[in-house]
Image (cartoon, rainbow, N blue to C red; front, side, top):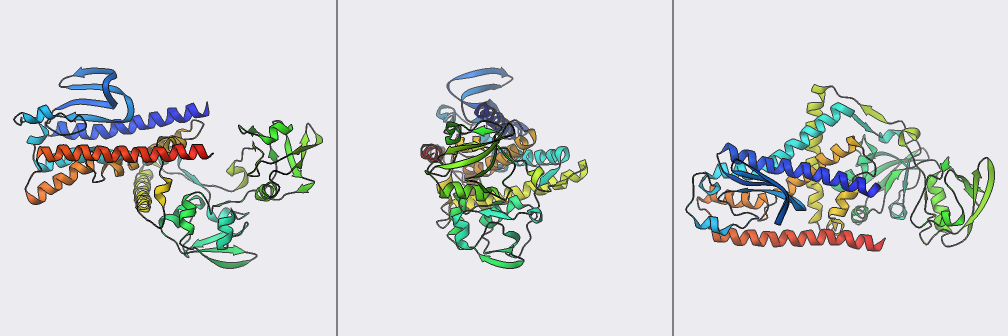
Length: 443
């Protein structure tokens, strides 16, 4: 059921984004009296799932969920309609319009995606406000792994500033370090302030999920609420609602201490001290090679920390939503820049449909759904404006060349550029989804 909910959210979000994007092209084309022959959600090679015609436009749903398209008369696009381009230009065709009109038609999709993201952020802030964990409220400090330990961080450290700048929302600390190339972290430890330097090699490791900086939580109460697919604990006899008190008669104050004890005793038998139905029970179990038992519990942040919620009136939500949208755009552009950095090696973390689908929660949460949809709308806009033929940005690049030089690229050149761009996009698609498959195989 969890996977089904993720898939449904992903498909619904993708459908909204594609329709809005193509509506941008459609609206601007109609504004300049340009004929739109097709408006499709998803691609329809060989056949479509549903279609109808209204006026001069055929509307439909394709079977290949890799995006969507509008087919504009007199334009070299995904349809590669060469026959139409052999005919004399007609007044209603894209190629007959002025360069600035064609430029607006081609940027319509990107503009609509940016507008959608801003509107969604505004409405989400108005409806739900914004709840976050203030960095100052981490009463137990942070928890890190061996990578973080090697640069000088310790479990229980309380982050004060990053590069001597206060970060209000703790969940933005890691992103701030990675995206802004921070050099130092200031922490409080044993009543003293320490300055931790961040080496260059730490950033690539953080991008791979290592060198984590997470909030530290207490160990108890630990009530078993779920099991993994491979659960040493379930095999040993642990049942749901068991309360774990300790291991080998050792008590733990923090959850990370419990994890470390299991890891230190991986593939070696230990004894779990449990309360079941009011009775003390001892269960021998052997952690797997990663020091895991395959058991889980549910932790609610608001039961551990004092969260902060900011509410917005309708008119307050407008500038706040726009600010959030602009910050999201800025952060994503910084993330995108990392892909081309040899130092960060972020290209190794590229993901495809599985990665995108997994960012959706396994339960239906409308607030998170709309926030993720707004974020994906920004991604779609940025990706489409890249100067790659077959993307909107490729068409924009050639139009700008025409505006500056006064010379229009030949139809044959545009045809070859379109083919070349489609090959590049296919390669990127295969690479990103190939990364997803490799990550699944490594699990």
